[in-house]
Structures are given as C-alpha cells and as structure tokens.
Amino acid sequence: MSYAEIVFEVRDDAAWIGINRPEVRNAFREQTLDEIADALNSTRTDPTIVAAVVYGVGGHFSAGGDFHAMMKLNKANSYMWNDRMQKVAMTCRNLPIPVIAMVEGACVGGGHELMLWCDLVIAAEDSIFGQTGARVGACPTVGATQYIGKLIGERRAKEMIFLCKRYSGAEAARIGLANESVPAGELLGRVEEVVAQIKGYSSQTIRSTKVSLNYDSDALYPSWQHGMELLANIWGTEESLEGMNAFLEKRPADFHQFRERNRAALDKYMDDFHEGRNQSRSSRQARQD
Image (cartoon, rainbow, N blue to C red; front, side, top):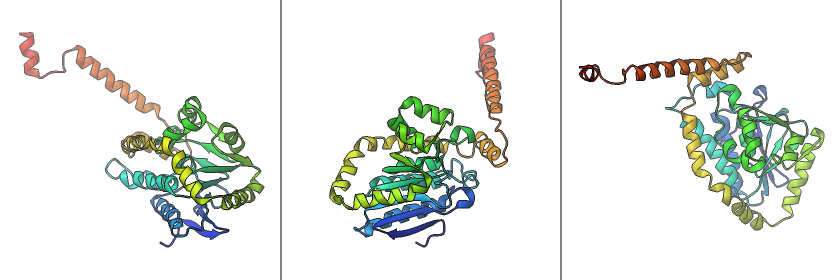
C-alpha cells in the first residue's frame, strides 16, 4: 500500500508511523485508519524491528476523528468506521513488539483512544489529553470506556468522559495515563532512548509478556462489540450532528433542545396513559360500556 495520510519509515530498528494531516491537527478519516493498520501490520515482515512509534506530524498527536467523515455515518454504514477503529486497536494490541505513542499537542477524542491502544506512552509536558465526546455528540466506546478506568480509576474516567476534563502531559504521567512526560524539545530524543533500550532486551520475552499482560484487558473484548453497537446508534442522529456542526461553526451546541423534546414526548405518553389512550378505540369503548 502507498501512503497518502501517514508517513512511514523504519530507522534505528523501529517503525515510525506519523499521522500526516496537520491541517486538521491530524484528525483521521477512514483512509487514515486503513494506512495506520497497514503500516503497523507491515512490521511483522521484519523481525529486526523492535518497536513501532505512533506520532503526529506538525505538532499534534491527533485531534481524533475528522468530523467531515464522521458526519456521513449512520446506523447502516457505521461498521465502515467502527470496524476500522477496532482493526487499528487490535493490531496495536496484538503486535509482538511494543507500540509507543509519542504524544505532543492535542491527544483528544479518538486520538486519545488511539493513545490508549498503545503499550507505552511518552508525552510532552505541555501536551493535552482528553475525551471530547460529550461536548460534540460523539460516543467514546472504542477504548475510552474500557481502558481509562483501569488506568486512572473509575471516578477520574467518568470525569474525563462526562465532563470532558483534560490533563496536561505532565498530569497524565502523574496519574497514570502516560508512562512519563518530558519537555517538548526532549520528546523525540527520549523516545529514541526507549527504543534503544528495548533493542537491548529479549524479543521473545517482550512478545510473551505482552500477551500475558494483555490477558486481563483482552477479556474486555465483548465490551468493544457492545460499544460499537452503542456507537452505531449514535452516528447520524440529530443530537450528534448538532454537536459536530456546532464545533465546526465555532458555537455552543444546543443539546438541551433534545432533553426538552424528550420531556414533551414523555408528557404526551403519560397523558395518554392516564387517559386510557394506550389501547384501541374499540377496546376503550367496550370498557366504557
């Protein structure tokens, strides 16, 4: 496969995979996910590759899914996105080598989930970690709901997801979202040091222990399937489109209109219930007679 959405090179016995859409802070679309998965899988053909490093070109790790792609999704075609997300995630988790996220700038939304799929995370101190789904009408159920609680506890996970709380890279390292943080100017050098360190260790030990370490979280696979079906019911809804349009139009989203609409629907239901209109006309007449 030739790459247009990522840059890929093998140097110093590591595969370097850079999301190359800096004009949108490395937000990804379906083609990007295809290329990331292909590049990661290609490392299997060269046993001398000791690690894969995922990063973003131009100052940001990834702002997540590109809304111009996501707004075209609905329940009928949701698998076109969801399956690609899962493929990248499972490729990261199933490779016999460590996958390292080198994080600078924005690491939010689906980009934050991409980070979660990686084995090790080294971040610039001033990078930003966060889940933005509640703000934009998306649903982070392809990694975030499964893994954040395991890393930083359920309370903090709910705060990140419900309240869109963000952490700096330094804070992320302190609470366990990242392994370590360094000044931005030292980030590349530190990742290269970690790759060199891995090169000096046993590949079969790393391969075997990665499988063993993943055992517990592998049991969350049914939750991934469950999450993708939940997400299928989110794509294309008026509420999700309101959130994404509001973001693109740089205005606050009006989500409360949907609560008010639901309240009106519930009021009508309860009125019909109390007035006996939840039955056929003939049945109602027979009971009145």
